[in-house]
Length: 517
Image (cartoon, one colour):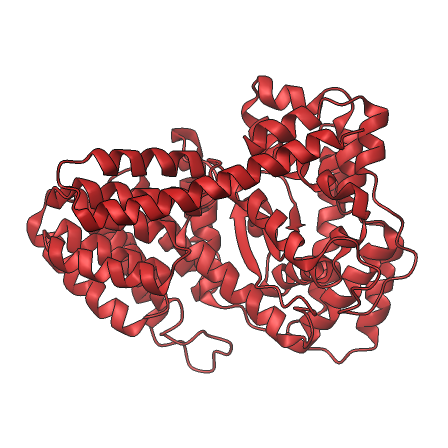
């Protein structure tokens, strides 16, 4: 319903849409934490970001891949930690994610959510270049550019942002929904919404530059990558709607960054193996069609000829991931073992800058478990997967991907009571983890516990923004033959809470309808 309402807003006449969506000019940027002149409260800003994320998570182009998400969040939050005050007075928790898209782009949502297109992740040749993009987007969030660009009477103008982003993702496949969004001049309206203006862009550049330097990255990576983006934008600008070019790269901005670099001492930063392995995964996940997998295989075969252990290991890993997606599990394991062995070889005498063996280990472990868990018909392999997952969980207790695989391995090995107990603990520790609730529902389903299965699914839907679907699951749970008196009490309490939330959302919608121009 949020998406439907957003699409209805987009059908307004162009003049009206511009009036609602046009951001206020930002001639003077306040210091971090200056909220007196900001019209959108930090709480509302975060809420809007979460609402948009609910819609993005349900889109097929959201890259819900544990190694990619963990890498981006570890990398991005390390950049945030490098600059005191980057979280601002509102103390936002940053969340970094990737979307499947063939165009170079990244964008910040209200409240600390930052997205990277898969093509941009592949185009970044070094971690310093990736740091320049994420640092720039962190600058937008830290300075609350979106919040300050919207007047107090125009808070609803952020709502169509979810529909626009989803329509951009959907446009690659065509369809009436995407065409409807692109029509009636919405391109200009959203361009004005997303383009923060030259002052804001310069400010984001300055903060991103400072973050890179504080985190120890090579600041020249910002110029190198921005120049590459400028060339790429020039190459496809005739075929792309204007609002996709949300970060106009001017010669003046690039020259300003170059001037700042000359004042800084040169720093060399070696890339981690994780960076190369994650890019290999992203290349495969960007296009899972037969042609896409064939193109990825060709790319990795050419990469095998490049010098450098990291490049060779990443190519071998990429071939393992391609084989996994083709369900050729024996070949996938062979290439994974080769990649692992490549990084464990002793370097030639006198070689500098070689990554240590433990680097990238968690991704190797995760992928090894992926291969085993993809073969549920082999009981012995599932028992081995359980042992491996248990050991990995002890070594990497904070990894959500490994934690999920541990639960999945217990279910696959038939240890359902143990799995349910473990997953109950997980959803208590990580209450905003829908995947853990989904696995818990699987464990209950295999045990024949229908009421508990539907209750767990309801919580998963709530976390994904599907309140109506959650209420449906609670209704199924109420009717389940094994629902106990205690279960009924839990269902009653949760239904009342969700129905109250639903009435509040509908009340807010009606209020917004009344004040529409």
